[in-house]
Image 1 (cartoon, helix red, strand yellow):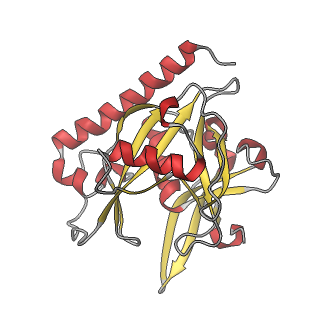
Image 2 (tube, helix red, strand yellow; image 1 turned 90 degrees about the vertical axis):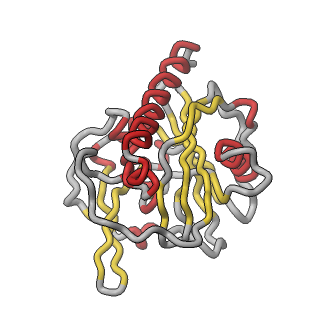
Length: 247
């Protein structure tokens, strides 16, 4: 079992990432509002002008880490195949921020409790990262970083979550698990960072491979990089994410 020092170190590491995001927001408020903190570009370079998202809804996701004997783990979920949006895809717990939520952290904790029965009392919220834009679904998403000594028994919400995934960070940083997911829409080629994991690395209780890609893959890719955990990997290795869809 990991000791209290492991949790303290993890909390400090995540706190440093929150400070990185806060510094960027203070120095580049317009870029932060456009989700540019999440781009793979040097911070001193400004991308071209973008059209602001109109009529977007605010959402929050919980990025929860905890120490284990084999290294830190992060909480993900596999969405139900019956859902209308992003069925079967892997995601962080989260959803829309409602009027009754005190803030984005409260929204992320509420959604995690609803989706996987995570007890908010177990969670230490470290802070929020700059917002990320999801034009395809019309959301402005705030990732909320948090840690816990032990997430406890987690149960997937029937009809919304198919599986709870407790993913080893070491598996996410292993170059052999890194791929570029490519989808093609309307004649356009749309690549994004992806992680193809063995079932044993996810705590899913199945040997089936688990693919993390799309918006969640982008968030994980940037978080691991900014934490200094990423190892060089071959971005030319490509896969079709639709081949890994679980019905």
